[in-house]
Image (cartoon, rainbow, N blue to C red):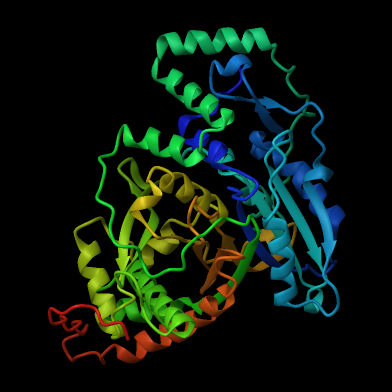
Length: 478
C-alpha cells in the first residue's frame, strides 16, 4: 500500500495558501568544469541519480471522503523536464539580478498535481558560472535518513560512480475504494489518525489553517502567556510575494570569536544576528520598540543518542537582546540563557555533522520548528552545518550555497545560515510588502561581526579571556 502522509507533514500542507507558500528553497552558484556545463548535462545527472530519492517521482493523492491522510503515489505522467527548467539572466548577469529572479520563483506555489519540487538552471553569471535554484516542499523530507533534491544533485567527487538502476515503471495508481478501506482499517487501529482527517476536512471547508495547526499543537503543549510584541515589523496581511537577500561571512572570523570566548559557534552567530537586527531596526525607525528582544526559533542539528554519527534535529527559542547596545554583553546574555538549555555545537561539530546536503538539513529543521506555535517566537533562524570540502554536480564545483527558508504563518522574516568551505552563507527571506528592505538587514551582518570582534578583549597569558559579566540593567533602546 502507498505511504501515507504523516501528521507533521499535514501542518505544511494545510497551512499553505497562495499568499503563504511553504516550500523551502536553496540557491547555489557553480563553476563549470573544463568541458563546460549545460542544461542537458544537468538533466542527465538527475535522470541517473533520481533513483536515490524515490519520493521525487511521487505525488499526493487524497483519500475519498477525507477518511484518512493523503497518500504518496507514483506519478504515471512524471516528466523530469517539467521539474527542471532553464533560464538566463539579462546581461550583464549579477547577484542582484539572480536574487530578483529567485524572488519570482519563490513567490509561486508548487503544483500539487505533480511531485512537489522544482529546479531552475540559471545561466548568464560572470565567468561562465551558473546557478541552480531548488524548491522543495518540506513534506518530501522525512526522517533522519532523508534524501532530498540537493542530496541527489551534489556529490563529493568531480566524477562520482555511476548509479545503475533498472528502468523505472510507476506503480499502478491505487483504486479509491482500496484507499478508503485502508484508511478505515488504520483509524480502527490508531484512532488518533481520525483527528488528523477531521482537521484536514475543516481546513478544506474554510476554517483557518492557523486555527487547525494551533488546535492540534495545543493537545500536547501547554499554553504560554502572550508577551509584549517584539520590535520586528508587524506582519500585516501576507502578500505571497518574496524579497530575498544574501550575505557572506568568513567562518574563521566566527571561529576566532568562539576560541576567544566561552561562547559556541552558534551563540556567536546569534549574537551577530542580534547586532545586525539592532542596527537595521535603528536605521529603519530610529529606535528599538516593543520588548527590546527578538525571540528566535533555532532548530539545531545535534548528535543523537544512537551514536556519534547519528543526527537529530531539535528546536528551541533564544531571546536575541537587540535592545542592548554593547556587543559583548549581547553575546554574554545569549550564552547564559542557552548554557543550561541544550548541548552547544562547537566548531568541530560543524565538520562532523556535514554529510547531509545543507538544504536537506534545513528541511529537517523546518519540520522540527513546525511543532511550535508562532506565538512563541518572532523570527526563525535556521543554522545547519555544511560540508567543509568541495561539493560537485557532474564536475561543476559549487562555490556558494544559500538556504532560502520558508516564512511561517504570521512571520514576515526568516533567516537561513549555511557553512561551506570556510565561509558562512546567510539567506534572508521576507514578505515583500512587510519587509521591502531585507537587503539592508543582510548588509548589516558583516558589520555586526566586525563590531563583536572589536569588542572581544585580547587573550590573557592564561589562555581564553573571560567575557565580563554584565551588570544587571534594563536593555537600552539605543
